[in-house]
Length: 320
Image 1 (cartoon, rainbow, N blue to C red):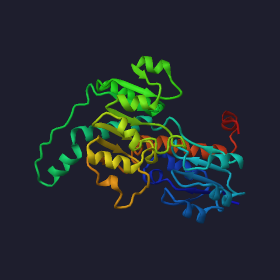
Image 2: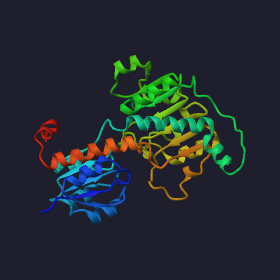
Image 3: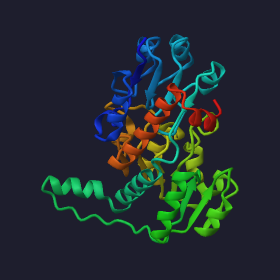
Image 4: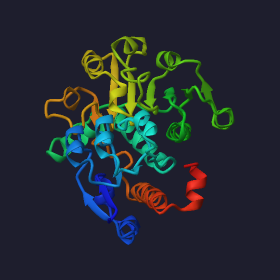
């Protein structure tokens, strides 16, 4: 029986690069869908594939159950695994492979792009100029503003390095503290998330989504922040409670919200953050650069092929 692969990630499919040749050389039968797919669509497709090469598709317990016994592996294009029922996949001995270390540079760059847009009101001014209106709004410098990072992993560290380049004092909270990095890059350790929230002018979120972080930025936490603080979210939309952010933007409590992710993607046309004041939303493209896509796609494809082919070095390294 021919090995069948369900490929859903659109950036993989839309971006040219060697990953296409690598996948085609495998001689697998590849079925392409335009993800991220909701659970309902995944359930329609489940059961006919040996592997998923997926993005942020909803791979729930029900999807995995229907996929068995044929499904042998899930290869995630990207890092976050919150859309996959990891506990059930592990219980069913379905390996879930991901691609850490491939997109930290580009996501950190995107984070600063959002910050500069908000601080300098670039979106509004550029949009006005395109429409023939010469608007000269007054922005803010970011030099000297305190950058607070929640989640000092690979991406958070790259944000810290860039904050230093902009002469921003950096503070961070992460339960797994890298003292050597913090010392080298002058990052002040905070003992809690609340310490970051109450002290920083700019708060950048770079933590995983789980039951402990879901909705961690809400109306109560926003009240603890400094007036005019900016929140940046290039992690997961569900880390923030939308209503609380919208109300804080309307009242002026928050100086801005820049996000590459939303709690519903793609969002409905009336999603409140799309029209909120001092808010810049991008369409989950923080890691969508030609360089990053190639790195992620090659890693995800090699993970898939190495597992299916039973490459002994790969199997031993990952302890399957």
